[in-house]
Length: 326
Image 1: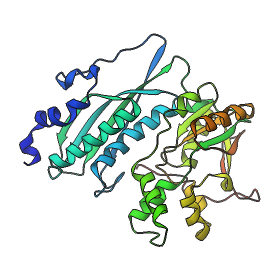
Image 2: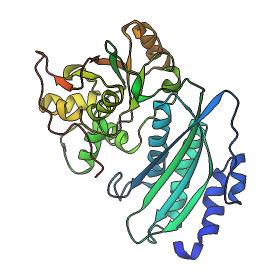
Image 3: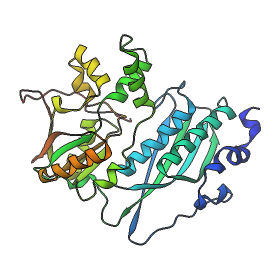
Image 4: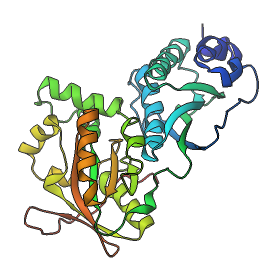
């Protein structure tokens, strides 16, 4: 059966209505209901991904769905919010038939269960261009406890969760680079590109600990620059302290200059935050409790510059600090 024969409402009934939570009303109405609990603020974010730009045309649809959901959950985590619901809009070319949609919905369902989130509704349209998938995620945070980009102050240490640059390397491998790398490293790096790990537990637990936070989507340096601009401060990052996975280290051992490039690569969806030095013990305790690597990579200073330093304290020239959308 071709996708156009299935019809919009049959597609919704078959693939997406089973994903709806109570507020989605079975996806039978034009809008949904969201309860607002006293003492909490709703946090709303939206991200879109485009075939051939944010994911490869041959990527499995269930993994495309999981990436779409997770990049939005990462935005919630970066504000210290816990996920609740999401709204989905798909613009799909006709050649993506019912099997693709079914696998896409399967991926959403898998991550809904993992992250405790449900579908409220959205829209489904056809397009003659590439597939465009847009998701709006809704979470909650206690009033006044959200973490924003503008709170960094001079003297703060700069921290990042997990490892940096893996998604960039995974995409390069999918495009044919590093054929000599070990199979387990290839699999790991490709997985980091296709299925990021949003820090949904860590983010809320940094409320009251961190001063400012953002997730690494455009690149570590680019996103730290967003914190600096909003907070009106400067920052220095020590290149040798930027955490790399074992797979990335294997590549960097053969290509030492790539470390600076990895500090500008995007799609990591790790949390980047500033916190006062006296929060170090609490942050290390969170790292141990959650089993998440947390690394201090630099510091916040007076001024407005952002510098990447080598082992001798010299400035490493960086032509482009991150991904540009336009």
